[in-house]
Amino acid sequence: MKIQSLTKLFLVAGVSCLMGSSLFGQGQTWVGTAGDGLWATALNWSGNAIPYGGTNIIGQSGAAVSVTGATAINVPTLYVGGIGTTPVLNINTTGTSYLNQLTIGDAGNNFSGIVNWTQGTLGRTGNLNTEIDICHASGYTGESATLNFGSTSSATAPVYLGGFGSTQVYVGTQAGTTGTLNLTGYGTFDTYDHVGGASTFPTGNISLGSWTNGNGTLNVVGGNLIIKTGTLSIGTDPNNGTQSGAHGVFNATIDSTGFSTILCGGTTTAGKYAVQLGGSGHSYFNLTLGSGFSTTVGQVFTLIDSATTIHNTFDSLAQGATISNSGYSFTVSYTGASSFSGGDAFTLTTSAVPEPQTWVMLFSGFGMLMGFRRMRRNG
Image (tube, rainbow, N blue to C red; front, side, top):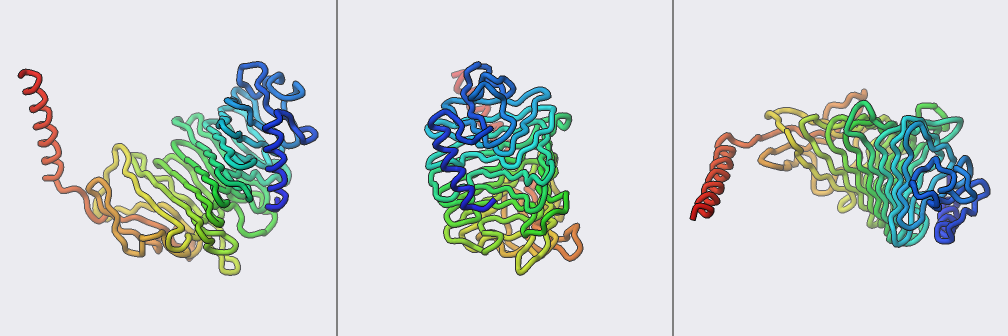
């Protein structure tokens, strides 16, 4: 969908949210009359009808909408966002949903919204793109939106599958917007085009803060998720290169389960790359070592696996740079061993671990502190 068309839709959607009624033919607006917060209750929707077509809106003040049981979302377009409040959509269903476009926070200035996706599959049907927009509308400022994806259990792991042609996930791409994509626990987040449709580049793209003054953040925690995308752009427009003020952040947490490697299978087309990072001051990487983390010198952690050369570097992290956390040190590489023929990988190699005496000192200090506390109590 072209940006101009999206902008018009967002503007009308914003007006519709404020008026509390849908302006889109078959589309419905959440009114919450039943008071149970359930998607599948007709009384909760304008016109007393569960959405089945058109463009649908969850934007009522204080709305928290839950999709549960065997219920599924089967509508072309869904907006989640409000002004002065933050509507929440909870997707925890055993069913398979079909959406052409899930838009969070995009409808006007200062819109915000949250989607918590802990169970259920978003599949594809026909020529649907299954696009996810987390603050992607142009012309608005102050927008803030978050998608939390993943389950604490492998038995209920959610699934997002890319669809036809140039499937996209946009995160805080536009000026004055702040978008966050949290991938945590078990699940499959797969934007890649499984249909083999239109050859439009890029295919299955995840864009973080990619356009002028946009702010996009990707948080990946632990090693239980399957993450696959065609291309990954952080702080840069995948089509037109680095943009003024674009700001993309990749926060990675490695814990006892390891790390969920991002597989980028896109191919180079007219100077474009499977992984494209913004220039100085545009893309950032932060490392956190989670609970139960341990490693040995020489161990390699592959965070991004690219089918092509990784273009550019994270700001202040040149090839061979060293980063430290909790006494561990790691060497950064953008040319690590890739699972793709001719590709490269963004890797961290353990170069130092805490010395044994460091742990002794830490425990000794802790013991002294507890001793002082006992003395004060006895005194």
